[in-house]
Image 1 (cartoon, rainbow, N blue to C red):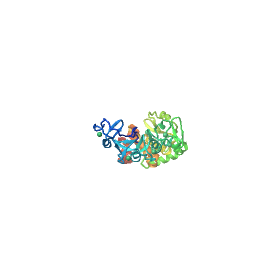
Image 2 (image 1 turned 180 degrees about the vertical axis):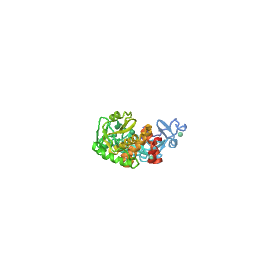
Image 3 (image 1 turned 90 degrees about the horizontal axis):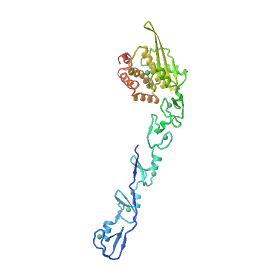
Length: 360
Ligand SMILES: [Zn+2]
Ligand SMILES: [Zn+2]
Ligand SMILES: [Zn+2]
Ligand SMILES: [Zn+2]
Ligand SMILES: [Zn+2]
Ligand SMILES: [Zn+2]
């Protein structure tokens, strides 16, 4: 947005004295040619002129209609105009209301506006407070346009990142003091234990379609309300964690005789996000199952491929938003590691990727 305030070069000049014709002869000389004045001469602004000198050199003419100007007139860009000629032909008009502009005005896309017309009709309005947006603004993924300062006063939805307020999301609710869910996302969130099982079945089908088929039949999954709790369980240092898988092997005489898994996922995630997180955690289970101890960027990058296929499977706008966030992440494991694994997957496909995981 370009906002320019300019002072209109509008000068209004009022002559106090109109030319005065003097009939008396005198010893005076012409202030233009310096020759003596005989007979009638003209006095203008306390100076004396021959008629001919005055007409040719002192008298001003309108640059619009070419006629003489006596009395008040306007100048613009070094040219002189009758007041009426100036108003009719030269003075700027507002592109919104069509009236004359004098003083401060605004320019946008080559058009000129009264400052008040510009603010009222041309400046975009904030989707939250409905006032014109003159300073820094935010345009979110969902097309909402608002003053940047609202982001400091309103919580963002943990699923879609919309600012939670009546105009954008019809309100929302808090899961705890740090997590908020908007009312657009509310109908689709996973918040009850009974909702876990059908979603697990859905994710297993999606993973099965790329060749990940031998995951354990029974994996306990627990919903966790706060990130703090998840971080405590996982001993993770990052703040944006959404799921965690604990793993335990029971060995007897150096031989693994049993494996225990437990997946923890944030409650109140949108079903599609919940399933993407679940797919990520199930790939951790896959790695544990196959005793694949990978470098952290390869491990998290690989597990994020699970989230990737779930998001691509559903293909909603929310999924596209989450895929975009994953692509834009600069985290060495979840962002850069993911991008490396994704480009390998695109080159060699799932079958070869699963076979060669150890070599990454
Ligand atoms: Zn003269
Ligand atoms: Zn004129
Ligand atoms: Zn106007
Ligand atoms: Zn606003
Ligand atoms: Zn939301
Ligand atoms: Zn992970």
